[in-house]
Length: 265
Image (tube, rainbow, N blue to C red; front, side, top):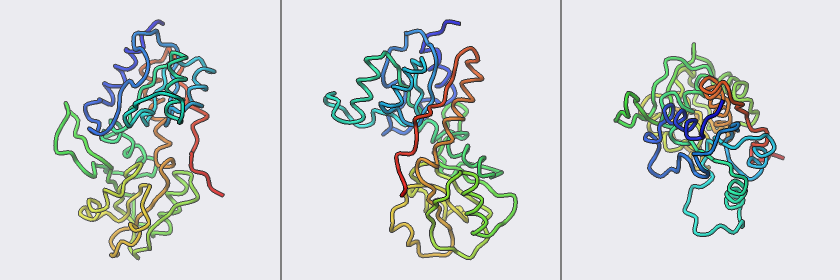
């Protein structure tokens, strides 16, 4: 079946509209000619040079990336850093790169919602509503949900470790409360702590919490930092599953080289 790349992009944007992304973000088609014929698709978190090499090896000419490889302004392309190297490699090999990022952060069934389902939360809603609708979508950051029953903080940490497959979770001091109402902000979510407190949330699952955030001076909330990569790695499968349904005649692959850039010793 013949199809142009722009048709696949239309499918993505009807699912996760660019209009719901953050103003600071850089979503959409970042590199490539959308009028080219689509071959296969590679789904990844980050479109780094090794991912582009993987796309070449696997015959994929469209990379759907969660994070945008081009974020800040670029004044020259001299292959002096990983961003420039990726850009040159993609252009040389006629590979298109599409970034979905905060479109998926703000979508009610986006990245935080998907992680909430993995953890096992029910009765979910948006943590920080934007106060506006785009089409029929109520958009906003983060997800609130409930466990099936109250559990101890120790059991909650064990549950999260098991569900996200991560044995290294940083957390604030125990509050002594049972955990029932949980908020999730995939990626960096320290900005949501006050909203969690205002919503009487028992625990917040997020990442990239700075040292001083753990000095929270109350016994109202348990903060969990599960790692940036660990909080977002599931989204590749969500994107792949959606594209497989919409493009059954094309090969939709998950990147095998896209691994956590943070190493532990």
